[in-house]
Length: 204
Length: 123
Image (cartoon, chains in turn red, purple):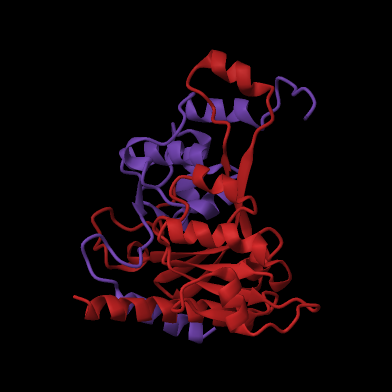
């Protein structure tokens, strides 16, 4: 057995691999707004998919036999990652298109730094549910208007009104297919989080 | 609906049932696992281990997220969580949850946000 590459169990946690940390950002939005496209364009790795089965294998054999014929329902998350530095990984998770499944994935938004809510300005309503969900779960977010070739040029304020979001939430335009543009959306989110932190610190 | 499954079909619920010994749903030490939790092996794969456990130890020599592990092994989150709980309980892997924007009772971590920001700006 090759033990090379393994650290001693009582190694200093601040050293080497044990010092690795992760942060998570969710990419939300209605069906077809470009969530997977954004994950793909900005990720360092080829995007992967992870799943959660909603029909769980039961501890009871009879139950297992009972459900074995049923179709498995799975909720898929497309995800990618960005190496922030040697020790810090940023994971990006595209939320499932069907928002009604979100609550089934236990703690999907818990532990996230924040979220990007993608909006297709031709179909604003498709992202209403995502915005509501961020507000309900108290996840800080920015709105990213994914500009499609035939999108009309709406003034941001008009869209802000239509989406009924609070004035402090940034609204930025982007092209989810473009790496730099998607990166800029993430930068807008982190800046927004910093602003919120500054406000929270002042309020103490 | 899908057609009837052959009894030897290694995919699907039967396979998961065998892998987990019929246990379902994460409990105990795995209940806090997040898709972005980093898993790192603390021991080398040894004899007598279930194939999937061995595979996890092998793949996590360098820290790997639960989501990546699930994608590489073709296992859904809840099944993987059961397998990881075994390894966590045996002290064979270590798990590190993603850093939230602000810890419970602590202030928002500006230093962390700065670190992420400068990383993104270098892209």
